[in-house]
Image (spheres, rainbow, N blue to C red):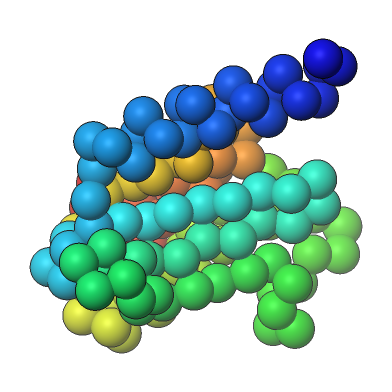
Length: 120
């Protein structure tokens, strides 16, 4: 077993543990974050009926990434998802770090969302 598969197995185990304990509702959806090597994505999910309320991606055309680090972009994305959530009348969420450590881009995303006005 190589290192990459060990890492992904570990992350999936952590992810399932997190998912077992937190559930998103209409009143308090789950803020799920995914990061790839280059981009970051976030969505508000209602687990009761399996629907996405709001989604955001750093691939969007309105995101200015030129000259910014990935951590700065993650913080901007957190602020943007908070703005979209406010428009959808959501002010309180449950944070789902998706098996990633609360560090770096994930932490910046969460801090940006809190800065934008989301409660979690």
